[in-house]
Image 1 (tube, rainbow, N blue to C red):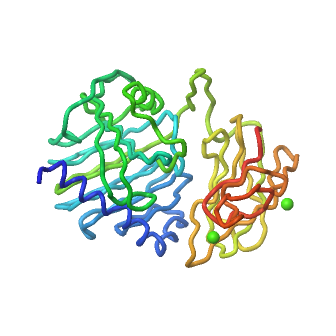
Image 2 (image 1 turned 120 degrees about the horizontal axis):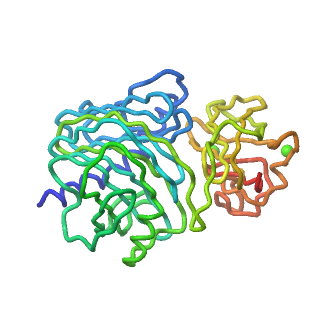
Image 3 (image 1 turned 30 degrees about the vertical axis):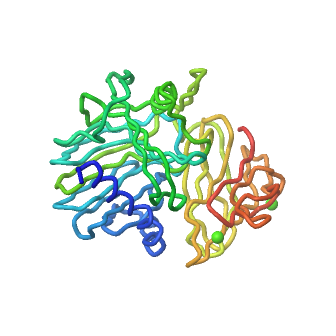
Length: 355
Ligand SMILES: [Ca+2]
Ligand SMILES: [Ca+2]
């Protein structure tokens, strides 16, 4: 069994680990101060989605810093991955900076998943003495001041974010390692597409991850999202501050639910709601579609979110008037109906149109 195969087999178990282990640890996301995580979990911190996973507890940890900062250390680990990013990936400018020591086998990558079809992808910016993923490059392309090798690997009947499945992994691996810079993810998706490697139509999470395999190392990385990119080259400014005041009136059934206001796919602000209706206020200069997303659904504790409405500069938009709702349980499925509901029973979002 070569090293590549061992890495992939080992990584196969991590998705199931997330599912099993995440329920009891979500309260970690609600502590204001920097916190160190050493158990498998996902959550939201300072508006950033994060995940932590290891198959060898006690050998790795991640400390959640301010904003998009996280730091990791691992020592003689089996396999470990952790980082911060977004619950919904896509075409973003991902800016990162800090320090990275990948040891004998570790890497720093923009990492995520799509569904329909199911794809696991890596944009590897830095790595230790071993260069992932092995195999033969499909070719190179240049972006963001560097040259990347493209690879495709296939996993057969392996666990994934949708359960056991057969799916492809897409890779960009930067030939010149770096610990800071900006990754224009859309350029990678386009380069992969040109090789016949098409992304799925549904974006799952995307994070700046630090990963280690049978090695020791450390990282201290701060991630942020730059201007959103599109094929037309339009851009938008910072996610917070600015001229529009958005109020989200919401509550939860448990009082530990996490919701995020996004504009044009960019997270503006994240709140943990209580069981009583309250007004949650943000300001932004972003333009585009406004959504409120429920991100930490669980059955134990039972979490649901009710959003009465949002208002934009005082103009109310009722949730029950919105057809875009991917989180309400209708017709036996999450988002299975026509929306027009205040409820988010599952992870998902209500869309309120452009602001
Ligand atoms: Ca209402
Ligand atoms: Ca629920």
